[in-house]
Length: 158
Image (cartoon, rainbow, N blue to C red; front, side):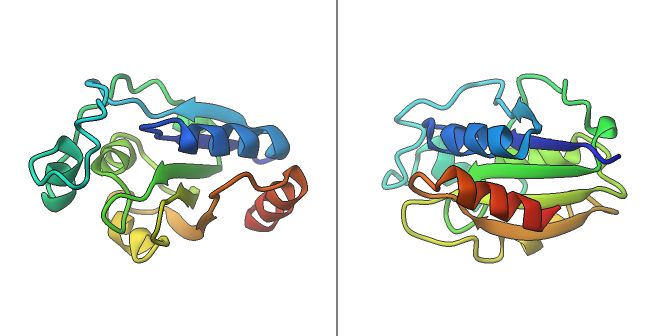
């Protein structure tokens, strides 16, 4: 029997709520991807060209350090990976997470929250970070999707 994990990064709590709701309706385990140095509100000011999130988003080699590497990825066949969209793609810490584990033979299903853009080319951007995995572009989980809608979507993805 396959096992599924919902792993997420949330800077402001929006993606955390979406991930918790998804994990609850899909009856999966939940794992928070945390940076070693938490983001402050100043770090998240996308209008400031010198803010941490802006600098990391513009530097394709940026890999913020993780607070831990405790996810038991080997125990799962499918991993929903959630994050806020920053500059039309996943934050750099998602690349750090994907490069920190062996995802070979696993299916990764993306989901995101965003204030204005879609997933864009996020799946393509992340492919090189997890060789041997299948990345499936998921959807935006903005607002407060109903439990039924989340359950139906999760069932379609696995």
